[in-house]
Amino acid sequence: MDCAGYVYVADTRNNRTQVRVKTEATPTPTPTSTVSPVIQVPGGAGLPTDTNADDKYDDVNGNGRKDCADVVLCFNQMSWVAANEPLAAFDYNGNGRVDFADTVWLFNNL
Ligand SMILES: [Ca+2]
Ligand SMILES: [Ca+2]
Image (cartoon, rainbow, N blue to C red; front, top):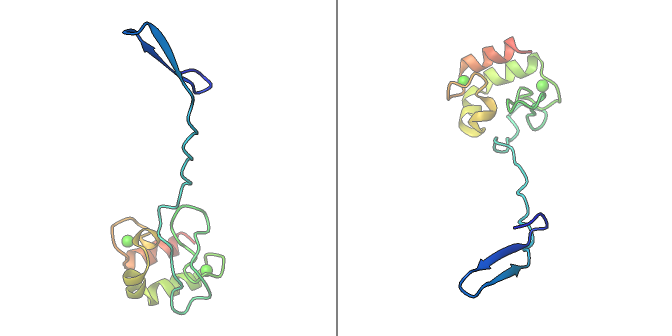
């Protein structure tokens, strides 16, 4: 194959070279987030957001910034978040579950 994408096939049995026309390139798939879509946490102002693009949704109440209200909502809705939100978005400490330690992590990372 050459730089233009043409494929040359050596046919030694018939002493000839065949040229195959290049095919169109396969479109590259668009990268998608590793985190499933989140939904609004009860008591929040909107969809939770990831304020610094680290796949941790630290703006739990969806007001566009991480603040104490997120820590409070995270604590109050811990069971709901664990049951309804994608784990990767709210498992801040990466221990495989949404629990009190994630609320502490959120507070310590305001
Ligand atoms: Ca917030
Ligand atoms: Ca956790």
